Amino acid sequence: MVNYKDLGLVNTREMFKKAMAGKYAIAAFNFNNMEQMQAIIQAAVECKSPVILQVSSGARKYANQTLLRYMAQGAVEYAKELGLHIPIALHLDHGDSFELCKSCIDMGFSSVMIDGSHLPYDENVALTKKVVEYAHQFDVTVEGELGVLAGVEDEVSAEHHTYTRPEEVEDFVKKTGVDSLAISIGTSHGANKFKPEQCTRNADGILVPPPLRFDILKEVEKRIPGFPIVLHGSSSVPQDKVAIINKYGGALKDAIGIPEEQLREAAKSAVCKINIDSDGRLAMTAAVREIFATKPAEFDPRKYLGPARESLKELYKHKLNNVLGSANTVE
Ligand code: G3H
Ligand code: 13P
Ligand code: ZN
Image 1 (cartoon, protein in one colour):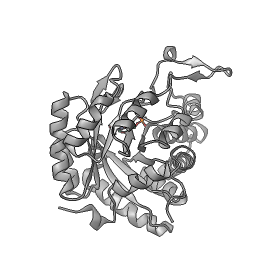
Image 2 (tube, protein in one colour):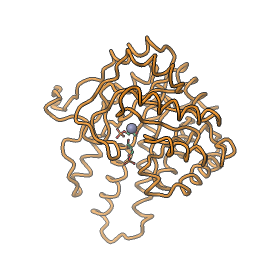
Image 3 (cartoon, helix red, strand yellow):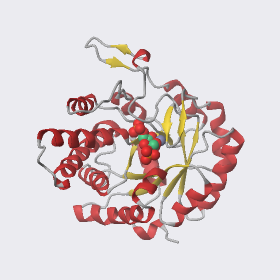
Image 4 (cartoon, helix red, strand yellow):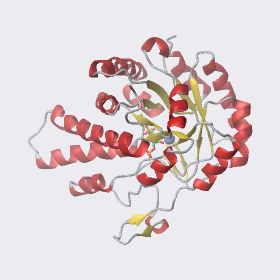
């Protein structure tokens, strides 16, 4: 049994309180390996921003749960070594069972998501409440979810969004005791969030996706004022990265994300946490593909993973500065 406080990590309570008051959001960046962790910490330190290190169950399988735990512990020391003691949370992304959440809590996570969004409402309430009761004994914060995002999440996929029903949120928060709530307002996971036929074209011929359902967000805020809201599936799918990938042999088709201006708008509201994974994958892949294509004799992994890490850091700095608005909030 390890408590996250002994590892120098923090839960999300204070982060979200400050984010709500300061009208910004905290970035939750997924990580699976050392280069991603380094890029996240370097960006957060350089931007003087709190950050959430996010681990999916797929990441635990890929990298090994013990290694990830020690990497997060190392991340706290690494930030200090880089010169700033920023708040860092270690969060389980899309926990799908009580056992998985418990296992993460027991090994030092400071925050967990229990994703019961695919379950019938009462079962989602019961499962989320069980996780909250366990987590709160250790001052670990819990994120629940209401509404289903379209797209693929781990092994579960949904063809269409089931938008969050604002009339359910008050009851859910009251019955479960969750600390934050992920909602479905039109974001989705992955790099293909919209089909071209769902989009319109602007004057420059660029595809513009349908706007997020800010009306639902407002209605949710009205019913649970001041309660931290989370947006999953919030990658913007930078078209310059997609173009590099495709130029150097990639085959990404119809890759469309959430416009950054809309996420900036959301960050000023009760949205306190914004999840970004796919954009980082695109940044790393573009950098690696370019090097493989332009320097075919290169075979030292540091020579392609190093630039990939640099590109990832620049992307994250851009997010913290210009999208989330959390830069310069740590003294
Ligand atoms: O929501 C999903 C995250 O992007 C994590 O993806 O389950 O492939 O690690 P993953
Ligand atoms: P993206 O696929 O849009 O990056 O979303 C990531 C996410 O929501 C992780 O939980
Ligand atoms: Zn997600």
